[in-house]
Length: 196
Ligand SMILES: *[C@@H]1O[C@H](CO)[C@@H](O)[C@H](O)[C@H]1NC(C)=O
Ligand SMILES: *[C@@H]1O[C@H](CO)[C@@H](O)[C@H](O)[C@H]1NC(C)=O
Picture 1 (cartoon, rainbow, N blue to C red):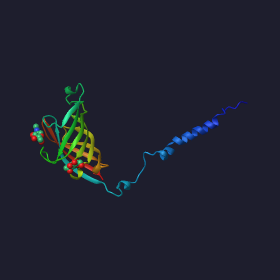
Picture 2: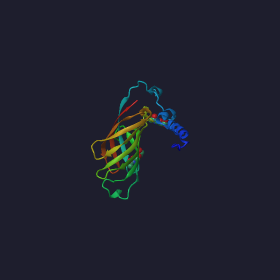
Picture 3: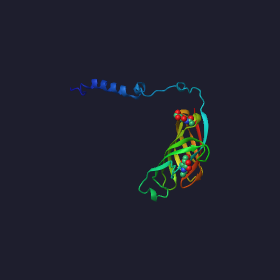
């Protein structure tokens, strides 16, 4: 009677089970070198309570004139025919000041992009960093990613992270239009963030 199993089977079984073991998730957890769990104390965070900070400043979006701080960098062929400027993409480097006046102390800049993302109302996708330059906050930043329907009285955008003093930041930013002209929009921001 012929052997129903080819003679190479036993050794190939060993071969495949060896590879299964090598690449199984169980083994992978032990062999990966690029990621590991560490203790919060290794970052000086042991028992450190999270702080809640409130930041208040005015954002100056200057869209034309000599001191323009926001420039349109892209648009769709139909953007200028759209009542909501759907498809327009604007790059900004807008000063943030303590008070609404342009002469007020600058505490940082809002650097990033806003893009018209709604066809039914004026609604921007905001992707920006608040880069602070004042006092102990100099060099620290907050990252904001959210939706800004500029005609609404108050708009809320998530703060998704931060750097330096704002490491591990999470929170939200509320924007309220202070004044508006063909040249400049001044927006009051109240930002609430948890961080260490
Ligand atoms: C532009 O900024 C300069 C310096 O701050 C200021 O003197 C000037 O009045 C500004 N120009 C306009 C059109 O706001
Ligand atoms: C902020 O930090 C930069 C870089 O270290 C420095 O050049 C600048 O003078 C600082 N500004 C203030 C207001 O402290």
